[in-house]
Length: 160
Image (cartoon, rainbow, N blue to C red; front, side, top):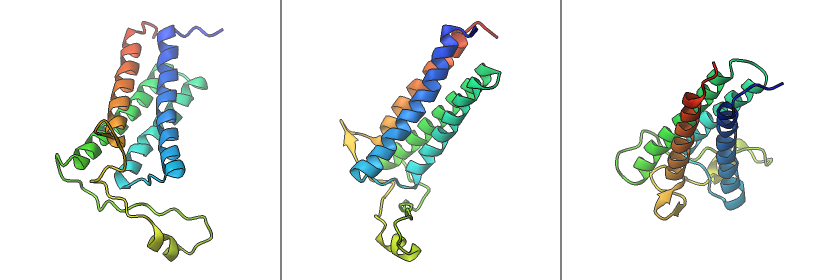
């Protein structure tokens, strides 16, 4: 019998769904629409990968609240990296990377061909915007809101 509170269940589901959906959107953008990630885009993906893994752990091992909180921390970390990236795109501050695209192999080409044919993706120019908000900006907005939502649910949860 599952005795988890509704708040804890919703927090765990949110901590799993949000980064999984954001990663799915990133890969659909990349492979479906040719929006190749820059180095800072990849920096935003890694905490989401970690958050998905951390949000899965409570299905198998206690303490659930701890794992869900760690997952929410991963989501927030990605959002903060997204804020930094958006600031670079909008010219609010300088970036700290060369902003070269990370070449992807696997098509039978030599490593040199892959590197030479890789698209140049700059971190300081948004690949796509909607209402003036870049993908990094959307990652910040969605990730920050989701992590705060999860932390608030955990705060409301009175079960130890």
